[in-house]
Image (cartoon, rainbow, N blue to C red; front, side, top):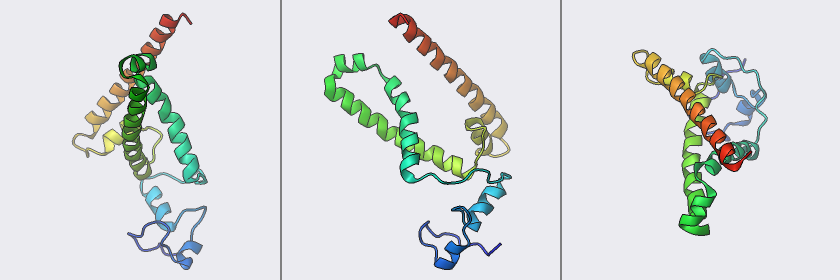
Amino acid sequence: MASPPPTGKPSGQYTDSERDTMVDGLTPRDMGVVNETGHVQELERNFSLLSVCSVGIVTGNTWAALGGSIAVAIYNGGPPGVLYEFIAVSVFYWLVAASLAELASSMPSSAGVYHWASITPGPKYGRICGWFAGWWNTFAWYGYLASIKRCQILTGD
């Protein structure tokens, strides 16, 4: 394998010789970072910026829609209130998405939140933080499912 490009370069500023060493869009440095965590690159990185943003918006939009009832928002704030709510929620979801993207790129794992919570605090508090994150995530899903069921009961579905 060729020597990795110098560290600290933003993407897009590689020389032609460095770009020639890329395999499937990965520089040798990228492959080294993924392999440092003990993971093997299995999937192709073929998503464009537009497709990644589209998936994020589709996934995040369901939570924004469930974050507040449209009927309550229109009754209390009218159409401008709904628009302002959507803008505020979108801004905060972009911040959450940026944080999760940073974690996912630095520590790729199918375990998700509880794995990140167990790694980031370090060895002293990692296990307990991971345990709490896993259980809080489980309880959040229980609450989410209960609210969906309650909405079904109220609407008669």
